Image (cartoon, rainbow over all chains, first blue to last red):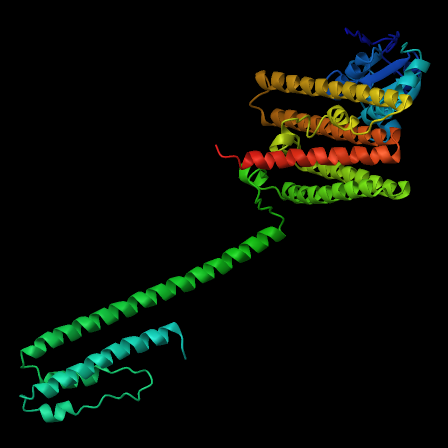
Length: 130
Length: 353
């Protein structure tokens, strides 16, 4: 099944600024905003292989997740730190949100898939129709 | 004192003694020496504890008959005898010294072995497994894991026997539940052990060197594929209700999907490393090489841990879906399957080629 991961979907909107202005905004808020923009949102890094694995997992289930590559985002560093604080552990990625709500890092995603709670969640968020 | 050396000395001395007596007998028969009378009466001290006749006595008697031709032969015989006895004594001394040094060496080796055991260096006796035999350097963390795992297998086999007996004896569900919980905890212990070993040497753990050859045949990221084990067990837990059938089917499907995802992640890791090593620009720079190595190790450790996490979750979910009795049968089937694979490995190891 060919899976398309939409990159940078709603991740960064360029703003006009002078040399004096600095881009402000709480990274956590940004994360939450981005997470609610799609049924399934994965925060990732293009070099991270575990992120690749989680992307393949969702594609294999027939889900089309939205992927935000932090290493390609100008505010990626701040978001990475915020995610570490949110998860209470390193590494920051991959992190999965379904229906705007946090599912967790790879082990939480796997556990919820195995115990059968992930699929209903996906269906509820409208990411899966079967 | 009856030590071998004393007996030997006594025997040799007795031989000499007899020789002296026969010689005295000769002297008495050919009484043509002017000094015969005095020489013949030299007494042999048979009361002597060592039974040893000093050379002096022999010398004294012999010198009186030096001129006689027949005594030349006797002298020669005496000399040869003395020489043989001397050589014999030297050989004996050398042999005893060798024995003593071998004894010391044995004691030393035993000490070393004991010290090594205490330090956790595992000396494997099974021909089938052995990190020790494959690598020159022995990592104590890995040796500790091997020892622990050996013990884990022993306990596992005991638990399987208990389960078998319990199921045949038709014990209550509550008692059976305790056995199931014990079995699950035992597997969880294994995953914890593996996680610790992964921190020490992830490539060792993922290589499966600590497993038997038949188990390694099914190897997937440091162990079995959970979906495969599920398949093994399912036939032993029938009959299932419709609901259970559905849930077991979903479990197999989701574990297969998770396995595929992890496999693809590792393929990407391998691809990245290969590309990095093949490219020229940073190679030759120790710092860059170390950075690459560290990244790969960390990432790989993550995958090995996720694989074990998947095994644990699949096992727990399977038990959740089943009744106590079914779960007991499932654990029994799993334990017996693993036991048979290990037994097959031993057979192969001793199979003549």
